[in-house]
Image (cartoon, rainbow, N blue to C red; front, side, top):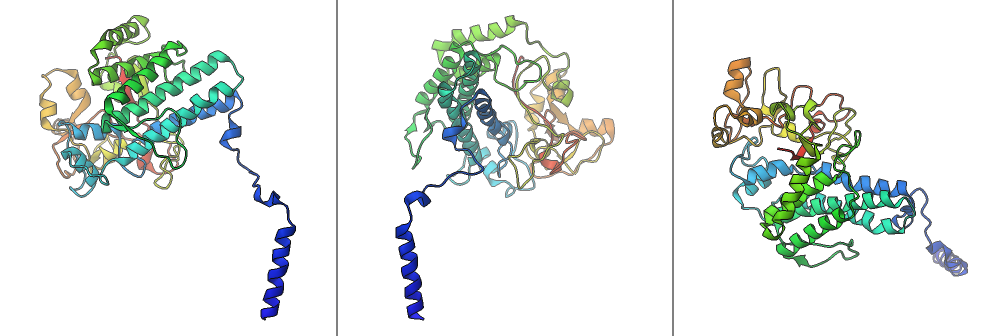
Length: 393
């Protein structure tokens, strides 16, 4: 037996020495490496589409971290809700500002940096590609504004963050940048994108959801006001005036209707994050697949019995003080917040109260009956409610 093993070992060893080094070279068969991929306008466009994709991950990426919900919970107008205090402890700790390094909405972090990575690729690869220069400038401007948007999310939630304009290489470590410097980097990125004048004021029909000059102006103004950068107040004012004077946007006649499916991309809408229910294939096993939004059922009315809304999970109950702060007759009150006692009186509907229930629900986004029509995967993950980000209001 020992002789047989020795013979086999010797033959195998000789075989190795007689081979060339070609076996060390692995040829990719069935995939294209990034270094070879970006060689045409179509492929640069596909990279840009990929940079938009993480916008749809914020509501659920193995963690409930809708930007609206987390921001509202960290304010004082909405409670956490859900079944009990232990249902989503990450959100409870966000509400009470007791988050730890492990109990934090960290998928916001992951999602935003995924978007930054993809935006940086478009910006870096564009100069190498022979294509229409005006179209290239537009793609790069879109990528820069997307990058600024993703960094803005991180900046507002964390302040001091790692910031880089070129994607990191192994071991993927870089310095943390002070919040004030992050602001300067964000605002410079927006200014660079706007300086090319490559963006349309409004997206053409069929391309709603892409970055526009008006959207970039809104992002610029949001960031400037958040930083309280008085040196840029006048520029922000001029940008807002330019949107008004453009005649491309106007106030909607029905505030309540803005939040319905028919109200998406209405006259007020400057930028929305698109979600679809028709053909939605998003599922718990594939949360990043194309489809809808879980936020409407997450904040929906628990145990709802009635004709208007879906049965939801009762997160983000609205504080009564947020409802009563509006004056009687203010259309924003009952157009944005559902007073369930009033709704029950008018329709006979009922629901089952859950933790921190107030009887008030965020009407803007709670799931409507058949709001996930046409889904093909999980019904709860495929509501078609767009995320309204910037409005003319």
